[in-house]
Each structure stands twice: as structure tokens, then as C-alpha cells.
Image (cartoon, rainbow, N blue to C red; front, side):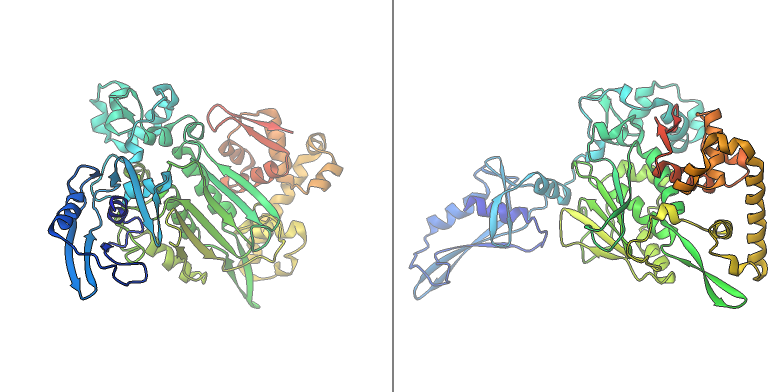
Length: 500
């Protein structure tokens, strides 16, 4: 009976309804002839306060008499301070099952508790030291954005005190907090094993179809947020001209950048980092599915989502807001749905059936035929659509059409000039046979040549030397990395390029 009371008090499914323990009846509902005495009622009421069930649950005991006998009913209210334990063990009930709670169920009970304790991101990350943090990154990028410049001028505190004031360091344990490791750690995934995003692009509509592209986003959040932002803008979002009339074209966009970016940022901000499972970002030929460890948090429930919000990781949420990646006005999901509806994707579909995960599906407004090549290979946008289209012989028919055609001719001319200027340098960098085999462009050849001369060049420096946009260089480098011609060794700071 004590285990049953404990399970009802924990209310793991968060139904917010009382549970009933009935004494004096068989499973089929017939009475067994029990005579309920005052002593039995006192003993049942004593379950609340005998010290074995903690925190003490709220329960009521009542007697009902029938011709065939009596029954005693114990009504157990859901506890606001979970998990509730019986002799140190947490018992839960889901449907007809009652048993001991596992680690994941314990986490859910802690998170739904209305008596809030220390959040996971503010807890000390034991067995780590201050050297596990990138202090240069903290001083150059994080601190100036989190603290007013006038205050910083007069701040004479030691680095540990500055970190502690932003909840990135625990002075009592003399170690970084979980938020500190995640936001400015040198290598968070070596400490919090699931703190990365797994991206996979599939050729078809199921997980069993061919994998076209795979990437892991890891590192501290300051770095990861920039990378995922670039990746969505220049690789996930693709647009192409669609013929409307002889004199007019419209751009068809598969996924609106702002909507997918907002969902990805929520993926990072609201997930639980207590698990070893990564966040998943899967792109199929007709949809994107994001699957996040950790279900709805705190006071957020399926019936009030997305109109109510709560924060599993308040320090990370505050940092992402200040850094400009999210807002905290509870407008994100509404904006996502508006963007998707305007782009003719249909509304995002949120799945709450599994209480341990949060899943969202976005259908493509321009689905690819199954088996289509990787999005990283096919990504074309703006003026580059014309230039790349001319190289492949696919867009010649548009050359005579108005201003769009004139813009394409200018870009094609620029590319032709770049090809002429390459000369013998191209042949020294990569043979004609190899160039044909891997289908790389003249600009990608030039990038390899520049890197041969200086393997520490940044993407921005390459774009300046080639006099093209940073986004164009980003796509070319991603292509070279994918086909195995280029590899980045080390991070953005202190790293270098390796040509294979």
C-alpha cells in the first residue's frame, strides 16, 4: 500500500488527477466482506506521517458501507514536490504498471516538481577544472556581451569571481558549472558525452534509405551556434527559379531559413544535457525531423504548448538571448508557424507522445526526388544559380530573360575571367583528369591553391582574395571537405587546413 501511495503521489504522466487505493474489494469489483474499523482507518491515514514516505503526500481516507461489506478508500493527491520516495526508493505508475523509477523517469520527476531545486546547468561539473574553459573566448566574446562596458572598466575581480557571477563557475566546489563547460568549454563532448547535434541527410523518406551527407556539430555553444546558423542558411535552405511566365520567374524555397533556425536554436536551448544521447537533426527527401532528448519541461504541457514557456537550462537560455540567437518573449513557435505557412510548407508537427523526447517535423515545400544528391552538393541560391547553371549547361534557356538574365551573364563573365586567370597554376594544383573525376569548379581549384600557399587562411581571407561572398566560399569549402580533398585540423582558432 505504501508503494502504491508513493506511485500515485509522483504522478509521472503529470495527469494532475488523484489516485485511489481501494481496500476491501476484489479485482472484479465484488466485495470481500471486510469490516472497516476505526483502527484500520487510523493506520491508513498514518501512512502519510510515519516517516517512510517522503516528502509527505496529501491523502484522505474514507469508509463506504454496503450490504456485502465495507471498503476503505485512500485518495492520494499528486505531489508538487517530486520525486516522492518510500524508504528511499522512488515508485511510479504508468497505466497498469507500478515499479521503481529509472534514471530517465527520475529526471522527469525532478523537472516537473513545482518546488524547484538547482537546475542541471547551474550545478557544478565535478572532476573538471578552470583550465577546461576557454578563458580567451570568455574574455573576448562572452563577457563583453553579458556585462555592460562601463561596469567592465571598473571590474577588478579575479577571473573565477567573474565566471561565478555569470554562473559559469562554482566557487564552493572550485570547478566550472555545467553551463560553463557547455558555453565556453574547450571540449564539452569529452565531459558531457551527449552535448552535440547529429545531422544526417537521407536520400529517401525513411531512415533505411541511403545516407547522402552526415555531420556532427560539437564544441562549445559559442562556436556551435555560429556553425549551425551558417549551415542552415547556406546548406539546408535551397532555392531555385521556377518558370511562371515568359518574363517572370519566382524563387521556390524548400525551407524558410528563419523557421528552421528557430527550431534548431530551441533544440540546443531546451534539451536535457544529462543524457548521453545527442540531439538529432535528420533531413529526408520530403521533410526535416528534429528529435530532442528531454520532453516538455516544468509547467509546459501538451495542452498549453506553445502559449506557456519554462526553462530547463536558464543560464544557457539567458546566454543565447543576449548573444542574439533567441528571444524570450514566447514568440518563437508562433513565428515558425507563420513562416512555414507563408512558404507553403504546412505547419510544423509537434509530437509529445514520448515523454522523454521532443520531436518536431517540418515538411518540405520543394521535396527532392528520392535518391537526389546531397543538399551540400546541390545548394544554389541568388546570382550563383545563374553562374553554376551555365557551367552545367542547365540554365542556358534563361539567358535572354530581362534583368535576371543580365545578372546571370555578368556572373558568368566573372567566372570565365577567373578561369582564364588560373592558367598553369590550376594544372599544377590538380590534374585535368582528377578535376573531371571529382567535378570541382575553377573557384574550388583556386581555393586549394591559396590554401597550399598558406594553410592558416580563414574563410573570410579567402573570400577577400577571390573577391566573392563569404557564403560562396563556405559552400565551396563544404564541397571540398565532403569529397575528401580538404580537412580542417583543430578549431577555428589555432587550426589549419590540410589538403589530401
